[in-house]
Length: 322
Image 1 (cartoon, one colour):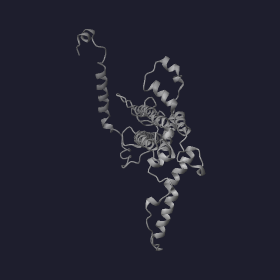
Image 2 (cartoon, one colour):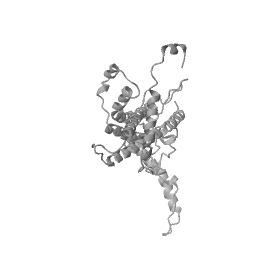
Image 3 (cartoon, rainbow, N blue to C red):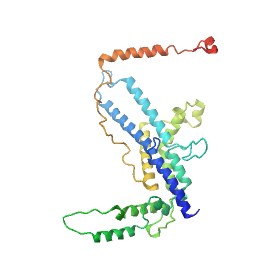
Image 4 (cartoon, helix red, strand yellow):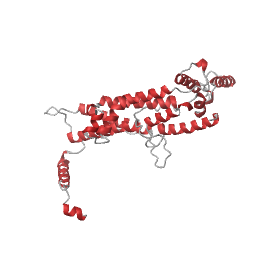
């Protein structure tokens, strides 16, 4: 493959990788990650509020058990499933078949980058990111620009970005490390080492493997005892500490891919900054005391409705009756 064709191929792949990682699609890694981290921050804040709640006479907190049990179970289910979804490697990042089972996940992204690691050369990276290869040329132009400017002592002046050599200098340094070369022996053909991507996979796997196996056997599928025993699933204990460690690993792997492999820069704070006050009305009860009996009656209606959901009458069933 010629240099031009190689660059064209790499540029096309990189655009898809960036779309997967940082794109606006609801399933891009960044969008999934922001949702996970927002919900985790919300839950942990509510959990802190529980700690601050007054004690009840029986020794528990004055909080509603039904409400908080629902909150706990929904949070755990959604978070564990989200970790599994983000680290999924069961399908490809790109699927050009008729059924197209392609997915957006960190696992699929890293797998695709590994398959095309030979395209991640210094020359291709600089061309695809539209960076000038020789930063010393930029420094010389900057020097000429500064020399031509008037220098009144009491006035600052703007230096255009095209005279900033730092992005090119920093990118060369990053590639030096990823390619395992020193600055004195740089070459346009220097290639990112496979072990860089494998190390990111290892960090992700180390933090998330138990969670993924737990989800497979207890959340995504109702695995039978024999199925669970094959992987000792019943021995897996997933704690909040494990979940929060997975959060950290996913955030750091995501940022490392964007910053070093794709050159898109960092993704900013993993927890989105709200454009509203998320604590509005948090000091208000969910229902006033005078409405509790209304809720109690509503609960009774639900029980009465579901009590009718027993087996069909066999005669009506085979006649196709309701």
